[in-house]
Structures are given as C-alpha cells and as structure tokens.
Length: 149
Image (cartoon, rainbow, N blue to C red; front, side, top):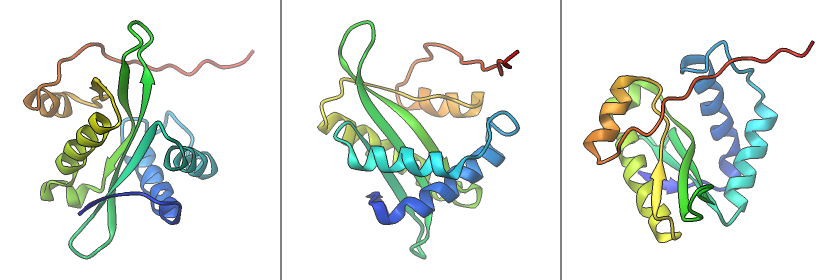
C-alpha cells in the first residue's frame, strides 16, 4: 500500500534514511544525521511544495519511501518535481514497492501542478528502469568532499 506520510511516520522515515545512507550509493560519503533527516521529513510533510510517500508491505510495516519537492525550474520557471529521497528495503524490492512509489509520486506531482519530474539514478540498472517509464538521461552526478583548510 502507498500512502502519504504524516508527522507520526518520521521515525520510520529516519530509519529508512539511515539504511539508505549505509547501504546505498552515499555509503561512506555522507554522515548519517538522523536529526537532519527528521527535519527534512517534517519540512516536506508540512510544506505545500512536496510530499513524502510511504510503501507499507503486506504486514503493514513501512518498508519504503519516496519524497519529492516541486520547484520553479532554474532555466524555465516551470514547476518541476525532483526526488529528494527514495529507498525501499532490499527484501521488498521484488514486490514492486519501488515502482508503485514512482507511479504514485508522478501522479501526486502532476496533481500538484508539476510539468516535469526528475530522479537520480545510483546505477545503470536504475537508469534503465527510468528509461522504461519514459525518462531520459539528462546528466550524471558526481560528488567530492571539499575539506576546509
């Protein structure tokens, strides 16, 4: 089941965010700061320009999330949705939770007035998933730590 997150779901959002940082492409690159994850979740849940959607497995456990915000695109001003968090527990991915989250996020973003939606792809496999749903690669993102001197 896919549903909108509420403030009562923040602990699950933080838990999934921590798992994502440990197991995902940012592992070893970004520090896990649960208080910042909670702040972000509360801001998106309480704001008018985004949503956090949750995937509950058949047992009712929150096993995935997808959060997005809508902003005026910096080149065109068009309302554009962009994913800011997306994670589904590995054992739940074969159940289709990730795809259900994507479809619902597209629907919700469209209803909120977005004319485009963008996602990051941590690997080529995820990129191929996006392509199957009509997305086109625009850029590839790289990140480097800048140390203070």
